[in-house]
Structures are given as structure tokens and as C-alpha cells.
View 1: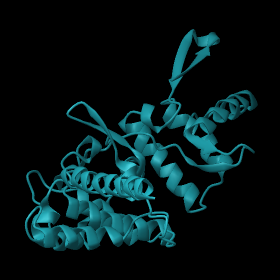
View 2: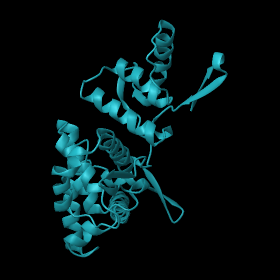
View 3: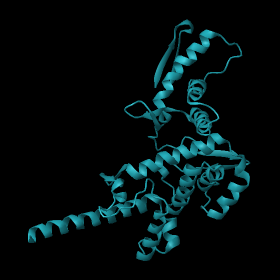
View 4: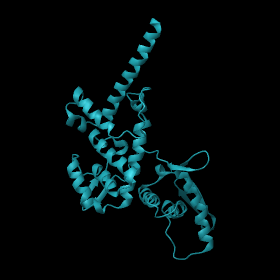
Length: 284
């Protein structure tokens, strides 16, 4: 948090330095501004200026003065902390380093509940369906995919995920979901996706580096930035091996159970390759 002193009012304000330090309201309001900037409805400078108010929980005053305007401009410089930049200072993206769902519930006639922190209650099939929508929205900006991504994960209490029901909601009642929540969840999914691709989890006290799951073979020339439909092949492969039962069994298995199993399989594959290299060099 950044402490900001206002001497004339003998008051301290605290501004988050990144999304991970926001409360639910700050997160939702800032998510909307990020979406507006992405849609080119506002510029980056306007984003920074407008973000000062929700991040400091300030109300916009009807009275405008040059001094107040200058103060907001100075404070808006802190918004740069929310973004990653390269060595030359060029913007590269928003910092996504959190596994907490800041918007766990949405009320629209009924209460709909999003995934727990860290996707701890998400099934592998649910994640794969969400990943498809996430990738499509990232490429096209299609609001329908953004709604569908939200609909896949926000369910009624104790409801079991069903793709057809989620699709019906996305095309129906979820057309009225506030963009704060739609894009706010997209940012959460983005952060979790980065964690899945690069994160480290603890299993029985041992660190597990998930990134090895996506390690490419030296002979593989295929380039991809995000594993998309290839993940669906994992369901088929695991269904054939009967590790978690048939196809539907893999889909309904907890995401982290599947990822840990994939880690074990990948580690065995890499260990076997290393062992074969050692054996070959010994024979030589």
C-alpha cells in the first residue's frame, strides 16, 4: 500500500499498488476501467486519472479547481505500479500475481457463486471449457465469450457444472451481468492461467513446479503461447488410460488432481530421457 498524507485535513489515505492489494469494490471498479481502456473508450492517461477515485475511495466533487485537478494528476502517476513495463519503460501488461477471487458472488435474481480462491473447487472439464472461451476472447474481444467464461464458473449454490446450462445463461440472464464482474473474472482467470503455466505448489511438503508439464521436446517445432485445444487431448489420453475413468470421469476430476498427475507423468518422461542419455553415454 502507498500511504498518502493530506496535511491540511490531517488525514492519511492508502492506495493499493496492484490488483492483489485491492478490496472487492476497488477491484471491480478498476476492472471496468481496464476494460474501457482495452476497448479504447478511454486512453491510458484517462484510465490513470479516473482510477484515482475508486482506488482511494474518493467521491468526485462538483466543485472543480486547478489545485484539485493537479493533485489528482500527481496521484495518477502511482497507477503505473499496476502495470508491467519492459527495460525501455514500455507498457507490457497489467500485473497479475494473485490467486484470490475478489468477486466470489454475484446476485442477479438468484445468487451465483464463482470458484474458490486458487480454483480449488474447479473441475478439469470446467477449466478446459473456460480456457477455450478465455483464448477466444483474448484474440477477438467478443463480449459473448466473456459472458460465457463467466457463466461456466458462476453457478448456483451446490450446482454441478453443465455446459448446456451455462451456455443458456450466457445467452440469457447473464447478458445483464455488470462488466465489472465479467472483466474482473477474466483478470482472475488470466492470473490463474499464469499460475498454472508457471506456478509452484506444495504437495506433501514438496514443491511441485507445474511449468515442466508444458516443457517442449527439443524436436518439437510447433510454437504456441497458450495451451488451448491441446489440453482437450489430455482428457482423451487419460480416459484411454483409465487413470480417472472414462472421458466424463476425467472432466469431473478436480483440476489440481489432474495437473499433479500430469506433473508425475511428465517428470517420469523427463527422468526416463535423462536415464537413457546416461546409459547411451556409458555404452559409448
